[in-house]
Image (cartoon, rainbow, N blue to C red):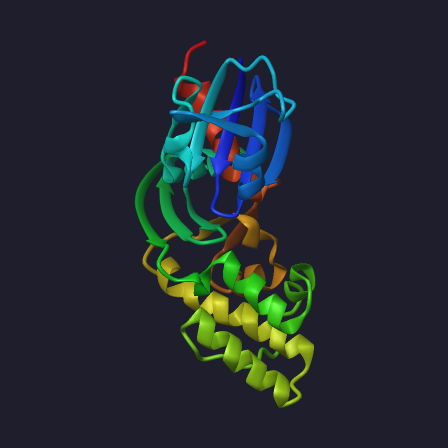
Length: 254
């Protein structure tokens, strides 16, 4: 069975195609471009799969912010927690773990036992612990995300709990002549400090990290002090879309 999974994120739409449990195709499109260039509207938003280079799909599943806007005759919507747990289980091959998914505008922490989510916490109210925070701070520092993610040693102390005020605080540190390396480390450590209260609510020694921020080496370095094992997956940004495909394989008959 050939299945399609779409994760309609706040910043980007992630698309995965799987057949017989093997990943055939993955595609990432900005959310604005996806709706503008690959969709039409007829009471519901209809996705033009041919424009995406996708044909002959047996089942399609959607998740994310826009899952209920897709054409329900084509897509079966599932909630984000379910999609990300399925994706993390498939990619990590684990059944018992703590899932940390850091997206552009929210953070999900889920306790998974025997492949089933048993507890969770979300942060979707503040950007200071999300990917958008790192992007904004990179803009202030005029440095790429990849460069920012390398630095974890001797972080400058950033105390503000607000993403907007943190930018002003960072500019003040720049004016003091603090090195770029320490500034980058400070940004990474400040985000880690915001994630830690969410994580300490759940007991578990194995952490699976997904979402775009899973590429951040410094934050993973800090997290290694709190967990026996940090499990990295091959496609952290596509985890939700892959989870949609895995759900279809397991719960939807051809």
